[in-house]
Length: 296
Image (cartoon, rainbow, N blue to C red):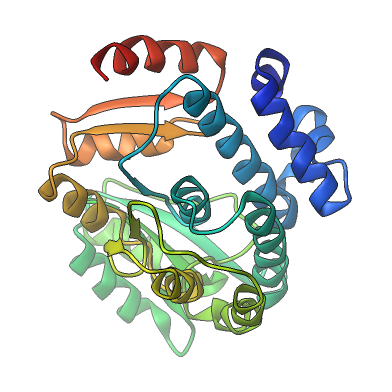
């Protein structure tokens, strides 16, 4: 991922070179040629996704397009803050590598799991989790839409919740191929380890509103941004509420940067009238610049 951006635009290539230099590893090689197994390791996945996202952002910025607000889903909150100038890219990429390592260390492989529940509102999913816990942890982790919730916790409890969700009327309930149970109470050790890392770097006041996962609202101060990044590790991603808050504040145009189109799809399910693009390659850059550049 990201190879086409690096080959097409010098500003994108500079982002990959900066990540390699900052981390002291060949992250570019992992992005461009890494195996599925290598990219599945969260301590590699997180800096890789952040780097591709910021590369796409720099391509848009070099062509005169700049955001007026930002948000990110989980890891993407770091990209949103880099876009807003809250923290530097070099500091962000160092932090997310540590974040990935801390999150992986928090729960041994195979002990935790995540599952997507489709077709039940969040209050029903929360009830399914309570009834399935049995002294284990299982909680709503990603509140992605009005009827799409990802749960996380101990693997056995997640399996019980899948069965109960289907019996309760969910259209689909399936386990996700992830390496750890993110955004639930099992991530508290990772949050505690991440806090001093974030305390060690400079946070500036964002240049524009950054809507954060833990509160589903904007932060306008560097200290609040830092605190929200700590809290989001073991808190649900309140994406549905967050997008609705952005829309209520007058935002009707969304540009997803980085690999994939997942967030564009989630936003479209929340607000069908919104204008939405995904930018992860040179063609995406050209399309957005052609449409939004002409409107600027």
